[in-house]
Length: 152
Image 1 (cartoon, rainbow, N blue to C red):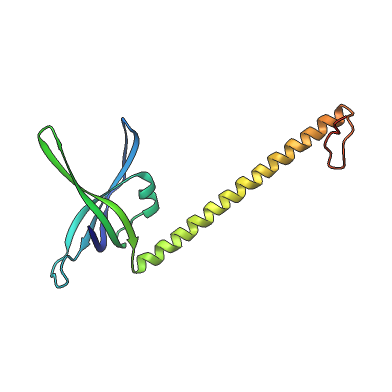
Image 2: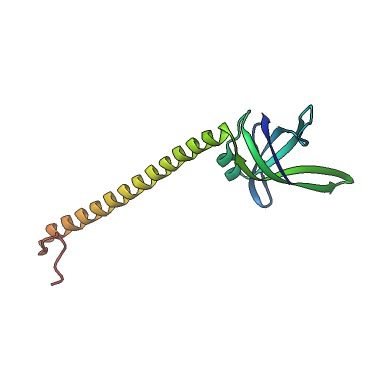
């Protein structure tokens, strides 16, 4: 099901370890209008499951969003429990501009990290080449114009 609304409450994420490994979830409450002429807004409690989604969406109070969710129910010891799981989220209105800025900053940070990793690799390659040259010079082995030992 799809809804548009405004985030009203963002609870702190919870985390733990299950038989399947570590998990992280967060609960948010969204206000929305089910009918165009509805006098009072409705509210829905939504669960976000997965650290990647929680970090990517980084929801805050007053974020305007369009969501897709599904309802789940399960039985445990004779009791039934229900949950609305958030499947997809798109920021709308002013929140969309905020999210674009966050995404741009995240992309810049990732590009900088990639550039730093590339520079480290280049430095390690240069250091290895210099070490190889130093070993060759210590052994009085003839080297070519690049400093690499000659094969004879």
